Length: 263
Image (cartoon, rainbow, N blue to C red; front, side):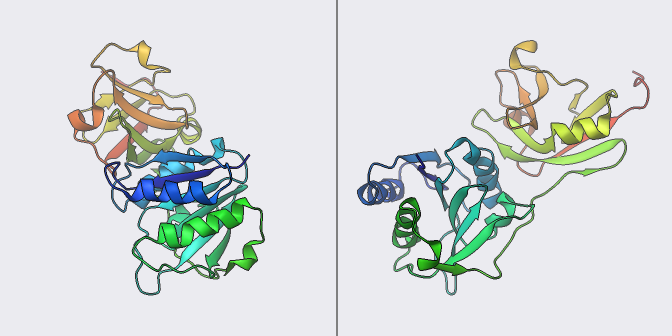
């Protein structure tokens, strides 16, 4: 059964989430409404795209995902239905569609039947659109092809035959720093060579990647590829982002050596 999910930059202490969930549960007949996360940094579309992009595939095909980030209605601001990879995404026309599907291949519609009557478009636009989609009704009844829409481009690592220069794109609740360097790129450039990872500055260096947290001692700096396949910088039972002064866009550089690195 498809579900409806919500991702937002709201605080749990605000009434917005309760109001939206109440409206969805009242309008949907037994369809589950699932919270993804509500601690996205305010207006941070890159952060929202990272979390949603690495989680939506775990939900049933046909699910509807409400992206409640940077939706505040402004003059001429449009609201979209993005259909891609068997899922539906409701969002403002703020560029996040390009971050979710950087390779393209999605269908984008502008919602035409519902208007943001207040400063809470999630209630005015997203709820009726989600109900329409969950019922399996034709999108063309409530929307038209969007034509042009805003599209942000994800920040990608830069690499050559011996280096990869990436950046931190997300800090998780354990304060681990997740980069945009994935295992596939690491293996492609590295070709099994020894390496050195420099985090933020020459002060913090790694020369190995572990498979799990139990391979290192408490307080030790480590690198590993997480479940999503991205290089993660962490400190065992510590807060890497805080202790190393990391935030999104902090630089992480990998250098590969053609022979064993000299001490």
